[in-house]
Image (tube, rainbow over all chains, first blue to last red; front, side, top):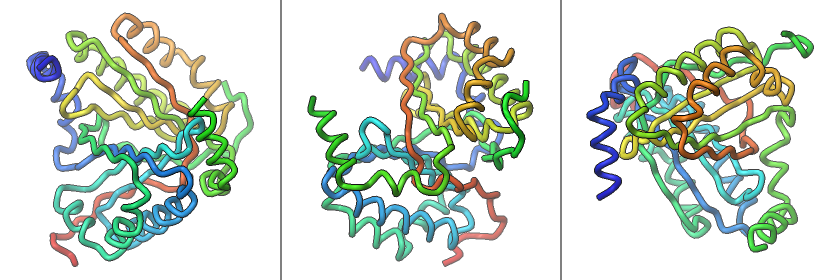
Length: 136
Length: 136
């Protein structure tokens, strides 16, 4: 009830347009995955193969950027950006996604999927510059 | 104590190399920020200005990708990728970062900074393809 109130408050405060105006079609999600620590090496191999296949074979899977917490390496977060809902629906029917999903079901202890709005949807990851520090 | 045990278990299981071998220099972090809902619009404006300045002016701030949870818009997560630790240390001394930090201190209710290892550090966000769906 408190969460509903806060959500409504945010909507009334008019903050959502700042997060949606640039490209309302993008589907952007955070996946929080807790993996069985003793199966983490195998899980990571599955995930890496799945991400590499998705990035190579699916033009509208814009990124699946997975990170592992340094202090809790079995806690994984994936920033997922799809061009639109159709891209996501297509993604979850691909052979590489199904292989990952079925292959890791018994390794995943918790899965939380959080739908989000991006603040600046068109932002891209840059190449690292080659100069020396400090450059101020 | 349990967390320490799990971390050690993961280290022993040899999973960390999968998350570090490609580019050990990258500094990759998740920032979880809970904003005072009534000040969220103003907070978002500060954050957007800060990110745009960082992306334009700092070659080795590779991305600051901010998302807002649809169900709790005042909960923000930022995936932060810096080319290395020096890039981050430089970033937090820039005028645009200090303006954001000082301007939003009273708006932030919670701040959690989580250091991470990226699974595939060199991954980039693609442009959305222009074709029609379904493309299977």
